[in-house]
Image (cartoon, rainbow, N blue to C red; front, side, top):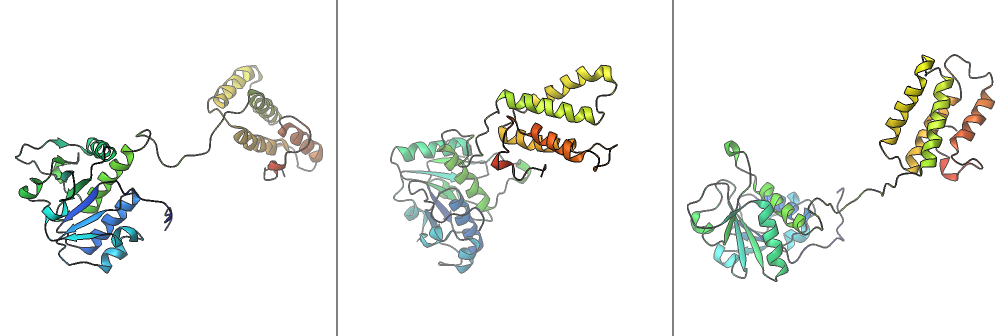
Length: 289
């Protein structure tokens, strides 16, 4: 499966995910997959309707086999949370009790803080059809609820687990806007290379009659330079642009390719090299041949 690396480790200190009387093996499997996406591995089932193990769950887990293999099954909720120090209960309905209610972002941070302090934590998720009973929520320490559309507040159980697992992982990043992946470092090119691009482009456009009428040329050149200085091009990007401009130098729309073409091509090649001299080896794929 794309994006999957079975060698990557999972979080053993993350919250346990507790499903109370889950009804479908497929939903359990999708929960396992959501957990694996964000580094969680401890899945507990309270009295699953169709029993355990479940091949349907394994198939739906999409290779999150380590989560499926580690599932613990309990007869009642009290047993499933007996070893935990702190438990959140998820619900989309207003409850008449005295428990604090948090959003998922705040809950993720709270779970992370308790984990760092050495506490064992868990998150309760109810039945697919109607969630958790009040007495089951009564066994939790706090409630977490999602900011969903009040007119359509019901979430698929795997979606709910995914949201909480995501907030758990995000709370452990150096910055909550960070991701585990990054693009290449984009260092702006030296100004001499950008100036070389300006000269190259201006010469090519002049040859093709771009600057019309002539009195407006200075302003047109200023506008081009303003546009080209805005992005902060890297060296590699400038090489790409020089290759494009060089292809314009070979022939003009009013002149056949044959007449004087070798001389124009040689001139374009020289202009394409930022510092003159031998052709850099990494330019072999440029469009100037």
